[in-house]
Amino acid sequence: MAQKPSIAKGTRDFSPSEVNKRNYIMDVIKKHFKTFGFQPIETPSFENSDTLMGKYGEEGDRLIFKILNSGDYLRKVDEEVLTKKDSNSLTFKISEKALRYDLTVPFARYVVMHQNEISFPFKRYQIQPVWRADRPQKGRFREFFQCDADVVGSDSLLQEIELVQLYDAVFTDLKLEGVTIKLNNRKVLAGIAEVIGESDRLIDFTVALDKLDKIGIEGVSKEMGEKGISESAIEKASPLFSLKGTNLEQLNILGELLRESDLGTKGVEELTFIIEALESLGLQSANLKIDVTLARGLNYYTGAIFEVAAPEGVSMGSIGGGGRYDDLTGIFGLKDVSGIGISFGLDRIYLVLEELGLFPETADSSLQVLCVNFGDKEAMVSLKLVNQLRKNGIRADLYPSSAKMQKQMKYANNLNVPYVVLIGEKELEAHSFVVRDMIKGGQTEYSFNDVDQFLKQL
RNA sequence: GUGGUUGUAGCUCAGCUGGUUAGAGCGCUGGAUUGUGGUUCCAGAGGUCGCCGGUUCGAACCCGGUCUUCCACCCCA
Image (cartoon, rainbow, N blue to C red; front, side, top):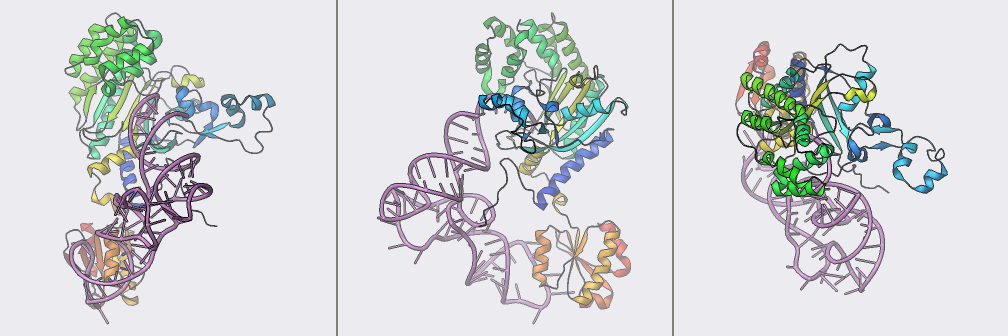
């Protein structure tokens, strides 16, 4: 009996139009990755579990897709482990591989394994799918693409500046104007925790602080209290909750607040350097905003933290994120290699561009020229033209049968083909072809000797 | 992982307190139009009402389970 097919939760099929539009975004991102000097690598879809496990926190471990061992995987497991029914300890016995959860950890592994072939600083980009066993929501999938650019082997703050410019370049090129690049620094967060005497609860503190724009000052205070942060500490931190003014004004206030913390002061200095440099260099269309409440992201960030928010009015989580991690490769045995990277959330950028109608017409058309088929003789001549166009890199095709004109035109229309070529009896005799502009509606007749003129128009 | 929500034609959705043959718009196919798409007119095709089970004389509608969608939490691109 035939059963209705379906696809797994949080996954999607992509139709031609969607793939075209996704490629458009990817091509733009890739173009700028290259112009900024990044080189491509790829890593396997799945890694050994111990490469991934424990790198993303407890929550992350739960969201990693584990791959069952091959063969009779239960046979090797001790009776004791089986009877205890403890999933955590059993997992390691029956699963030794897992799907990649992000591109950063596999990259760190790559750097350590290939350290002798790599010239540092190493700038790499990587565009591949990642998998998370999360509950899907809008803009949140279990399989999605990340587009990462990372630099390892340089602790220069120029990298931070460059990566902000890279964000700006990509989003400007995509015509997605008005994105906000939020900037923070882990050292500032650690400094605050130090100054208020809650260094031990840095993570709890930052996770709560991160929710400020969502649950408000009261909500944040309440959550901090619940996590065991003292009232006086919350009180001390409260100026943070309502920081106002320009980026540099905010940094001044922060500098005052963190005067007694060396680490915090260092963080403020770093941010100030970055902000001043970028203000003097200028950004094309993105807004740059200091946001001390920005604490998202993985536990391994040690310096700068980035997050990109869609333009105002678009309800979408962050469309990009990143940061500096001073010792990511350390966990794989390579010490003192500083790295920094950013990621573009392809799938979310797609949804935002779609919502704002920002895809160019051409992004969704895979054919540039379609020849109408009027019959065998005409088709042969059309094919000659098609071949000539194809040799010039034009995406051209001939309708395969001499169906009704209406049907062929409709086909061209549905495929968003901008130019339809007509070679019928008349044109055959005149040794010419008629080009119909499907967007403007007009028609032009060319002699077969003037194909170049038509090519120029494309 | 917790709580909630959604599913009816290819798409967007109607469908009354459970009642006989489940509808609309768009799209699709054919025709008006044997060399012209996106506008018009006419006709037609297309549905195991997500799936499995239960209650009932009778279920798209009520109940249970399951899958999926979206939302909140958690976390995050």
